[in-house]
Length: 316
Image (tube, rainbow, N blue to C red; front, side):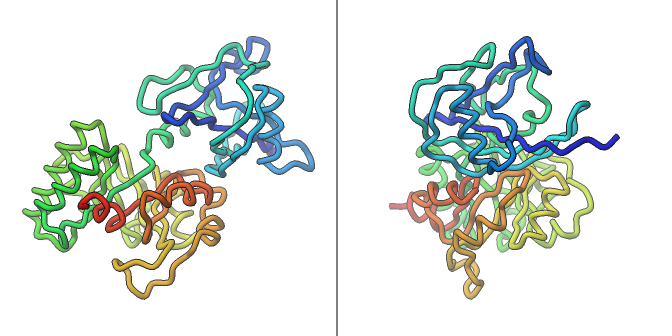
């Protein structure tokens, strides 16, 4: 049976500590008692962003002052085919005054969530667990011991996501580095991803793998790890990552880099166009530092990934 496509906007209200807001559907609604992100149907003549601002004022009594595009996902219910436009609500005016839910809850991304979740909202919870900053190792230039030292400094400053990308190291040094990184990430409840070397990732029981673009485009199915991401440089690659059900993608370079000299930089406007409407988080990459985080998220990025821009800062 063909169902009419219904556009819905949903807001991820974020506190400075990273907690997000969920509402429990009232007893007189479909899926009563289920938890969801606040929002509602996009009415004729509205953009998804306009619809969300209106819904949040009607439902919660707040006026949105800073909205960021994030993800778009589709879900087929028994009663409707829904296309959900998720936005990050970074700032608002007014105190929460809920008018439609039976309860509200602020939830920590890496802590217990509320159940049951509305089915269309469930995949968003994993996306919110993905840290906003990724460090990509550079031990082939720094040296393994120096890389571990600057990683320790970055962990002390809050880094919780590291990709081990060391094709130029010999296998024994790459594994030594990976084991040292893994021990530290587990101690800090962070995530370690191995770039390209699936055998090493399986041997270490890594949290996940990161696929270079050539591996992504040759893949016909998602590999079996909890976290799987990929490097992308085009909309075609991003859409293939989405079709495989990957958890995230990296897109760049946003700015010129020493890692890929001569490769044209995207800039933020092109970045925003390329990531629009994707179902998974995208991290911006290429000549970025931590102070670029706000620009990245305003352009639709989940966060940023950095090599020299991160390790160079923590060496000081």
